[in-house]
Image (tube, rainbow, N blue to C red; front, side, top):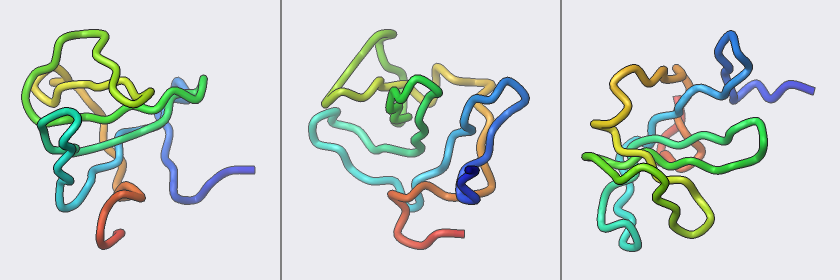
Length: 85
């Protein structure tokens, strides 16, 4: 069954969903700007700036927005957003 609130790329990876407005995450000392789940169930949060590769906080992989120049975003906003598109 396909979730209508999730978009995937040609390789089956979930596209990043923007968090609008970004949410302050004290544990990371940064704003979460997008999130997604990988096929293996791994949660990923994209935060502002650059992050050391391999950073994990609260069982989520952390990715820096500046480190993901070619990130593909969904037209659908994250479940973390205040107002969904």
